Structures are given as structure tokens and as C-alpha cells.
Length: 463
Image 1 (tube, rainbow, N blue to C red):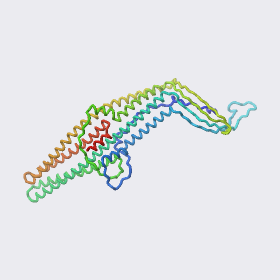
Image 2: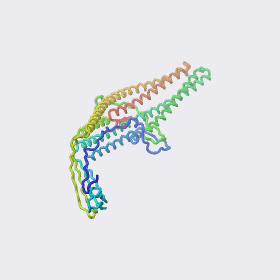
Image 3: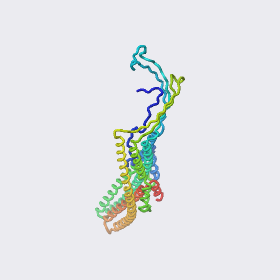
Image 4: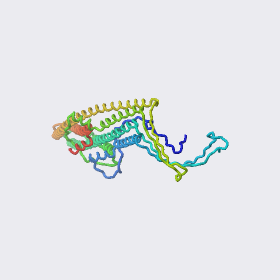
């Protein structure tokens, strides 16, 4: 049906708008933190990459962090959408109408009446206002959206913590790979020297051929270990480059070495208190829980009356120069009577969402307790393992030196030397693995108590 000239538009009932279940603001998937958006172009120069440089790059280019930033923008957009239901909606419209009316079609068939009137025209330009005066559902939705924005901001902070964990782990893995290459290269050189010595002694007739064969087998085994270590190190550098967003093909060297510095931690109770107060993922879920509570209240308020106002003011006439002002104001009270059970359905869905969020919050609280406890255990265990591994390397080096001296003096064959080489290689591997585990445990402990971004930088500066 058409609208009469000069009449106000039909009022918009905010309470009658479609409501949808608002999903909690979610953090990016863990797998996204192993990727990035590469920045810049690769250069032919080999760049030095320190741990701090890698961390700064990761906090700019990591995919998980960029997705978290976009989620925060999306949450702000949802807040503005909900807020728009409470703010005035003002529009201006102008229309030039040309009409021709059939009186016959309207039933006017009397003698003397024309069958058609027109054509005639009129101009109508007016300012339109729609304003919700009271709608508890919209009010609660806007409050929930505000908390969802807060949750998204906490999720972004948590994403930064996860980037620190991902970058720290990737950089430390690369450092461990580089240490394995250096160790394997040194072992190759030692094995080659021992092989050459065994060959010389065989030629001199002071050692059997089995000694030379045994030394050659050991030499080739060390070469295989070096080839594998070099391959693994190259792949670890590629993984690091992916996490921090280096341009594809950009070669780099690790400017830092794996540090070892004992860490004095807070007590268990203090660590847990700090974790509950500081961890952004926990704070985000707290905000989401409060938002779910407000969403449930919004659903429960759908059966309550809503009050709105609609008004317009404008000019209407034959043309803009021959017109007069008109206005129209309508106050509307909308009382829901029966909507097919929609309000009940929304309330049930909101209640289910609230229960799920509360369950997730309690689960996360238990997960934090688990992570803090295990991080402290790993940190203490790794520190002890580093101390033992250091001692084992010293002892293995002494045993190899003594075995070489005994072989050179003809006291024993080179089986003892080969065994000492194997023991030294195992000791070096244990030391590299324990040092990596200790440094990763530091990063994981900082993440567990919600202190990764600041804490890891401090740990590294204290190396």
C-alpha cells in the first residue's frame, strides 16, 4: 500500500528486531601461530637475527596475532551495531511524485465524473527520526557487546603471549640445531684425526687392520650425524622464518647463543595468584562469561514492553517554491503478546551458552593450575639436568683424552677410543637437549603466569 503525502513513516520497533545468539569472542587457532604474513622483500645479504629482533618481528607479522587483531575489530563492529539500536536514526528523503489516478478503478462511475484524474505532481522533502526510548533487550545486548570488546582485547593480549611462546620455542630450537651442527662438526674432525692415526699405525705395523676399519666406521658415522644435523638446522631456520614473517628466501644467522641462567621463581601460591590475575586468556573468558549473563537477561527481557518514538518534519507542495511545512510525531508502546515461543527459544539458547562459558571458565582455571605446576616442575628438573649434563660432558672429554693416550701408547686398541667418542657424543646431545629444555621451560613458566612478553625479554637480557 502507498503512503499518504505528508504522513510520517511507520515507526520502527526496536523490540521487534531479529535477535541472534552472539557467539563468544574466540581466540585464533593455535596452528595459526606457526604462520605469518611475510613483510618486505628478501635481500641477497645474510642478516644477523637476534632473539629480540625475532620477537619484534613476530609481534608484527605473526598470523595468529593479526587474526586476533581482526577479531577485536569485529567485536567493536558488533558493539556499534548493538549501540545503533539505542541511538537516534535520522534520515532525509526528498521525492518528486507524478501521478495519474483512475477513478473508475476506485469505483467512481457516476455521470459527470471523469474516468481519470491527472496527471498531477507534488514535491515532498522531510527529515525522519526514529528513536528507541526504552528497550531492555537492546540495552542488555549493548552491555554484552561492550564486554565482548573487552574480551577481544584480552584475547589480543593472549595472542601476543602465544607469539612470544612460539617465537621463543622456534628460536631456541634453531639455537639447539646450530649447537648440534657445531658439535657434530667437531666430532667429525676428531674422528677423522683418529682414523688417520689408526691408518698410520697400521701402515707402520703397530696396529691391526681392525683398528683402522673401526675408526673408519666411526668417522663415517660422525659424517652422517653432521649431514643430518645440518639438514635439521636448515629446516629449523625455515620454521623460525615462517613464525616471524621473514621474506621467503631471506638467509640469516643467529646472532645470539643459547643462554643459561638459573631462574628464581615465585612460590606456587604466589605464581597461581599472579596467573589468575594476569593471564589474558582467563580475563577474556571472565569477560565473556559476564557477557553471556547479560545476553541471557536480554533474551529474558524480550517479553517486556518497548517504547519508541518516530517523527518527521518537511515541506510538501506542488514544487519546492510552492510548498508548506508539515510534521508528524508518533509515540509507540509495543507490548509482545505472542511470538510463537521465540523469546522462550532465545532464553534457552542464551542459558545454554552461559552454561558452556561457565564450564569453560572452570576448566581454564584448572588448566592454569596444571600449567603453573608443570612449568615449575619442568623448570626445576631442566636446571638439574643441565648441571648433570655439563658434568657428563667434562667427564666424557677426560675419558676420550685418556683413551687416546692409552691407544697412542699401545696399551689398548682403539675400541676404547671409539666407545669414548660415542660417550662424548651422547653427553653433548644430552647437554644441548637439557639446555634447550631449560630455556623453553623459562618461556613456558612466563606464559603460565601471564608474564611472557615482559618476562622473556628480561630473562634474555639477564643471560
